[in-house]
Image (tube, rainbow, N blue to C red; front, side):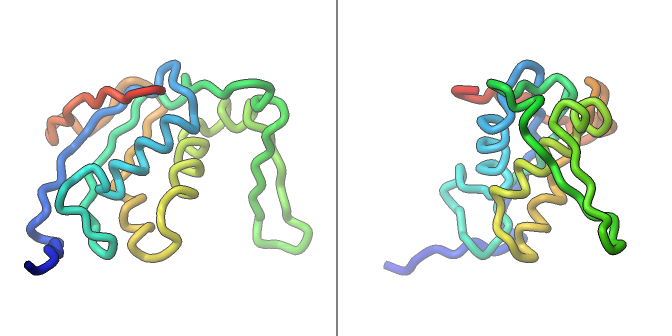
Length: 145
């Protein structure tokens, strides 16, 4: 018996809608990364993008446990010498709530061109409105979040 290897054009890719309201950041990111990678499908192939498109709404209402809102630091660099910038999770959640979820999911995907392609299928919006009604995204109930 031969091992099945999925071809990129043979894998159906669904559109799923995730509501992040009141969900814990890390637990939410784990399940989103799992779906983006395609590990929930029987035709999962590690070197092929078999995952689904994910639309996340209400990213500004995601929850962090403990004192992470004050203590967790996020770093970015301007590109200039000495241009390191630091902000805590509360300030980043207020200014750019989509970046918190994107960063958490990015760290759980492969660090190569396939991971970047998977991350491009993640659409995150701070409010409850999104422009993907035409794709008819199905609501996804997340377990243990």
